[in-house]
Image 1 (cartoon, rainbow, N blue to C red):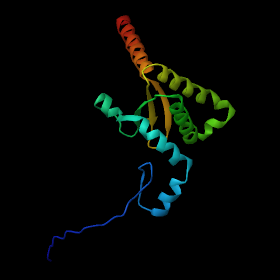
Image 2 (tube, one colour; image 1 turned 90 degrees about the vertical axis):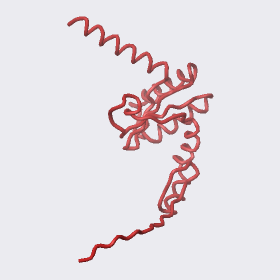
Image 3 (cartoon, rainbow, N blue to C red; image 1 turned 45 degrees about the vertical axis):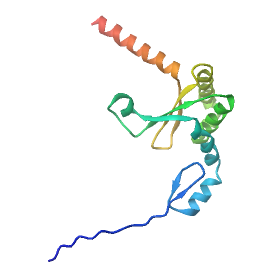
Image 4 (spheres, rainbow, N blue to C red; image 1 turned 60 degrees about the vertical axis):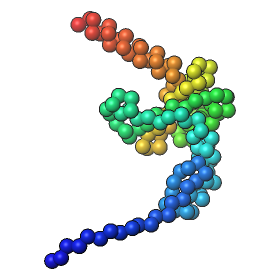
Length: 155
């Protein structure tokens, strides 16, 4: 038996849609560029200041879901996020889920009125959630720490 070492070069053609989504199939890329999601992502991506994982924040945890830190500067930015939220969560169009769309709009409006920063959760299952504003995140962390401190003092 003879062992040989071979170096192979593989050439792969990639197709990049207008919103920088990458495909290996030209027709899939063309179809995608005709969708509402592509148009919305083209408007959404410039809002993203940074994308982080649980690991980035806590130096441990999962990298399956990410959080986009977005900067809202005008009302049309909120419209873009809400349209994408509705598209990715089409089940929310049923009347009993209207409260979730209203809640997302409220969170984004608060972000725009405050620091302008909001957090959007995205999962490996194509999920898309409006998590809240910078100010609401700080408030939640303070509240959780306060509760933990109170529970520690009770023991």
